[in-house]
Image (tube, rainbow, N blue to C red; front, side, top):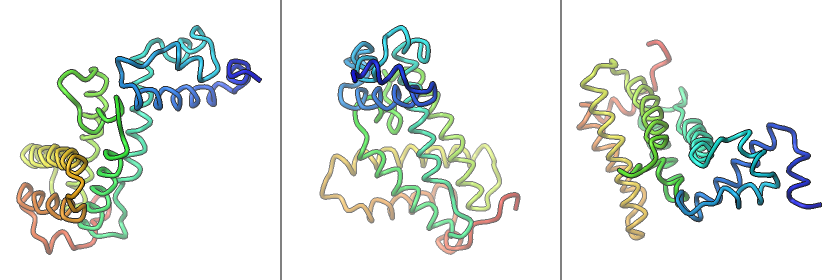
Length: 205
């Protein structure tokens, strides 16, 4: 059975997932500019016209891929009430570094946007940052104030840079990178090592 016939027989939700799966692979391998909508549609087993029914253009495809990726990142970094703030933060930083190292092409822009990245990249990244800032402040038991939002937002940018450096320097010890990230957070937010080791506050506390 040809790819096109197989693609046409999929249920709508399955077809959409298939398009995102194929598009994600192309964006990772070729980057945004060199990815071909025609090639994506062909590999997914649909016509271009049918693909445009789900995604009106290449930027919409990239948005779909990045939103799915972003949702996975948020799920992997969600704090556990059974862990201390330190353990949750270490787990989240490790997850981010793993994701960054495994990413490539246009998908890597989600973890480290560039000045020329499509606007959709910046929008999704900003939305994820908002969630992460709120999570971190809550896990530290800190009030959500403008000053602390700036501090934690700056720390997230530091973690992004740490991800780039860790990938570029293969001899850089991962545990040391994570430890350094938490030390920077302590200074930025004004939290002590002892506070990081306390149980994560329950929601609403």
